[in-house]
Length: 205
Image 1 (cartoon, rainbow, N blue to C red):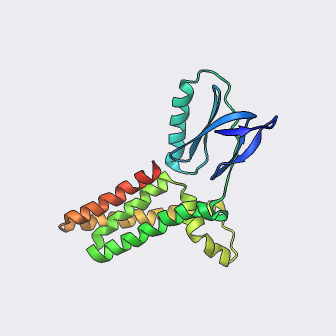
Image 2 (cartoon, rainbow, N blue to C red):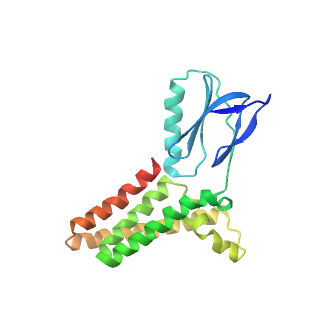
Image 3 (spheres, rainbow, N blue to C red):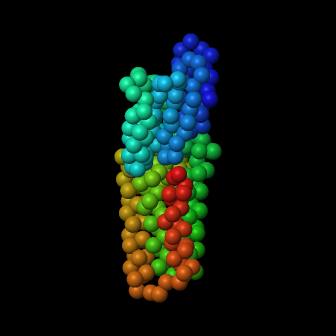
């Protein structure tokens, strides 16, 4: 619950977003996939504050589902500002963990079990669609490099680099499955691959 004791909308810091809430008591609920619901009485606003491909579809589904039971009541404005993860250490940490920790684990699996474990790069292909790919693949993990060289990367270039990395991971996964067809795969290798396939879904929901 959020309380605004002013006579007009006021901005409240809610972690990843700074949101404008109307006067009085309001309820804010965060859904998986960077979607939040702002509700005051029977009036609601369903907003998406991410930049994931699947997230937009998920937001549209929630909007239709929630507003279907809300009738024709006027929606709340629900304006908000998204915090930049690069400027907030606690927002950067999840992106850093999601990118680098699986990379280290997959590299260790490749060293231990061979090139068949390249198939685990499917994790990054899923993450590209489920999460904010610009922050996950470029801005947060490599932002410090751009800062050192004093290079301000544009949004178009960020999208290009992120898509390029995703293509590299797709190629790695395809190569891994090619080796998978040619070799006998142990039960442990199958479990490790299943772990990396399911991990993005666990992180998303």
